[in-house]
Structure formats: structure tokens, C-alpha cells
Image (tube, rainbow, N blue to C red; front, side, top):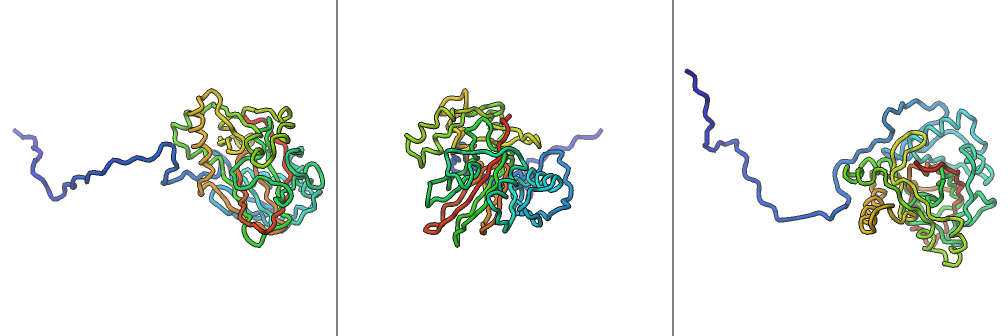
Length: 320
């Protein structure tokens, strides 16, 4: 008759030592955590194809590429427009060195993507569609992460920015990939914001540098609007975080404390370096970004030197 083996109760040389006790510790709730990031540049199922009309030079893992080859002084042909648009969807912000476009050529390039936007809250260049950023003349948005004009019912599709005058050092611009920002949220946070909506208002952003009497004149023209906290890209279908510190005031249907806490966490996602690209400008450079999928930050570290930029924005769709 066989007998089942009996496990020994004697210690063996291979037994693991007992873990040393640790003192109590905690991490503040809703902080940013170290560890691996999910860095997925393309939507699920996206088919990459080669580019025939230019070279694409990636500048970061998921966002930002320099486009080498095409001159933008004439409106793009249909074939060139298709390839640039595909690169924009894949890289979210594109850089074209040394273009030195006239204001008219800059507008014509942007117009290939749709109707051009005007913004009476900002200083104009030589036409209403051109916004001129020159801190020596008018205070403008710098040193804050934001997505342009989310206080509109139809925020901008994208923008074409050219640096006219560049300081000898400083004055870089950063962009953040808000699809990566969404991908890396904890699942419980994704569940809490699924289907949620947020209110956007022009006042919080512009009150930083405009007096109340000037802002009051625009209140009826730009009433608060609601957008989804997580929007879907209309061309790729990808989910993206769509709140920002300049214009998002609160979450609809949430108590103030919970809304503020959640928004603080969501705002922080743009600050993660792995989701960013940083661009050092030279005069005449062009950046073309997808405003639906990104936030950006102009670095104000160039005083006492001057930095002058001109931007043309393209009217977008209603977020869904």
C-alpha cells in the first residue's frame, strides 16, 4: 500500500526570509505616478503608409514631427494636402522649417483645411484672420497649458503658427498629446468621466490680462458652453481628454469639491514629459497642430528680448 508524502515542517535553505516591516506611508490621492506609460501614437487599426511627397522626421515618441521637402508658399495640391493631413493625424503637430510665408500665403495654406477663424479677443495682424502675438504690444497666452478657444461651440480644428521674430534663446513651444493623456488615466478615473461633460468659459483665461470692462463687452457673444470631457476625434475616432486650465470651469452634475479634484487630476495629464514634444523656433518656421488632439504651452523665458508670432486658426466641428 502506498503512502502519500508528508510535507516537512523543517526550514530549508531555500526558504525566503521574512519581509522587513515598513513604516506606514501614503501618496496623496490623484497624484502623478512614476512607472511605465502607454505610449501609443496611432489609433487601433490604423494602417500606416509611406509618404511620397516629403520626409517625416519624428521629434518625440507619440507627438511631433518635422516635415522636410515641401514649400508652403503656394496652396497645397490635393495630393500634398492629403499627405500633410495624414501626417497631422498621425503626429498631431507638424513643423516646417524656414518657410518665411507672407501673411497671405499663411492664410491660403490654412484655408486648405476649411473656413478661417477670427478672434476679437486677440490682437490682429494684417487681416482679421491673423492673430498677432507680441507681448511688447498686447499681453497674450503664455506659460499655461491650454487648447485654443474651447469656449466656442466649435473650437478650432487646428492652427498654423509662424514665428516672425525669435529671441536669441528661449521662447520654445511645447505640445502635449491628449490621446496619450487619456490612455494613461487610471481605469477608475476613466469610468468616472465616461460620458461626463464640462463647462468652458472664456473669462478665466482672459481675465489674467484684460480688465473687466473689456471682458464684459464679450459676455453675450461668448456664453459658457458644454463639451464632453473625453471627445472622439472626428477623423480617427480616437478618444482624447478635452479639458484645459484656461477655459474649463467645472464638470456638469458633479459637486464642486469632486469637480475641482477631478479637474486637477485631468489638468495634470498635459504635464507628463512622455506625452510632449518641445520645439525650438527659428525665424520663418511654421507649426501646424491638431487643436482637437493637443494642448500647447508657450514658454515665457526670453525677456528682455522680443518674440513675435502670427497664427491662423481653422474653424472646427462640435466636439462629440
